[in-house]
Length: 130
Image (tube, rainbow, N blue to C red; front, top):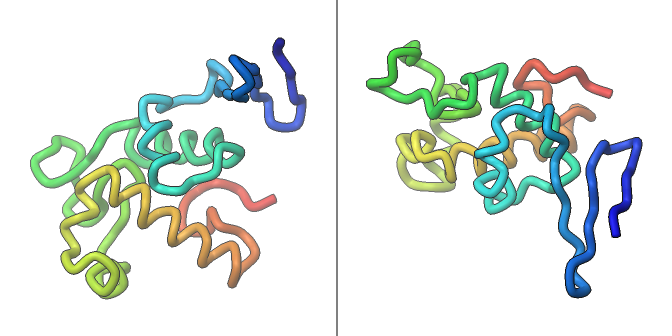
């Protein structure tokens, strides 16, 4: 059976007792869904997160050598060196943000910090706060 939620615009389906969800077709960058979930992003934030990936990188892993690389912002979520010390303290090497798994994981850390301290996790990006 399918359950439709107007608030989140997701479809839920129960298959052999396990509930699975699907993102609406109009959400961009869905190829990054599993990476985002593995990095800790909750499913209900994925539509906004993936729209931000579209705004930041057009769904690309923009790193050094990529034609769109601007020399400062790295990966699908365009993490910049403002976070260098924090990233090195957590992961040991700044360059891990070129790996999409770390890029999404660090973005989740950023989101949680901004949500806890400023009331809106999307402050570092262009998503509007609600």
